[in-house]
View 1 (cartoon, rainbow, N blue to C red):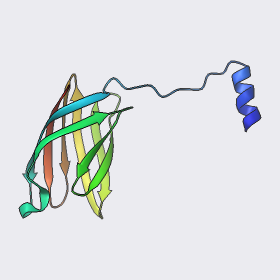
View 2 (cartoon, one colour):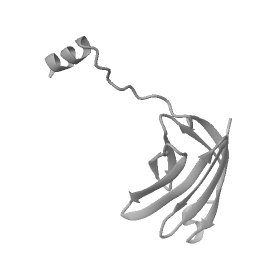
View 3 (tube, rainbow, N blue to C red):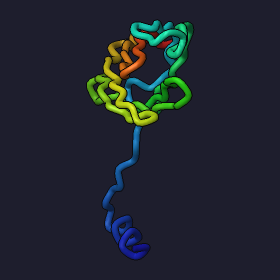
View 4 (cartoon, one colour):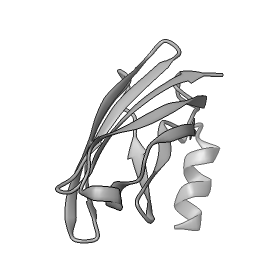
Length: 115
């Protein structure tokens, strides 16, 4: 394998390098609970999300979810969390990030702006 890589580099074949996405940055704003089973889902509040290489982490209950941002800014991902299916849907456009996390017991809406 080492010889193949050295050979490719010697003949000038380029190896792709991951580049930062146009959506990378820190976004701050609020989240609100839109569906809840009592106090189980929290109460909303201030949040900060950092997008790095088109991925951000959103906390949901006691877990961190890695969410991917599409090349067009779309956010559309299904995640299994504690045996439950969560849908994460939204969009980044300009300096605005908006997305929803929806599960069987809880749902939340996030509105953030790039700092």
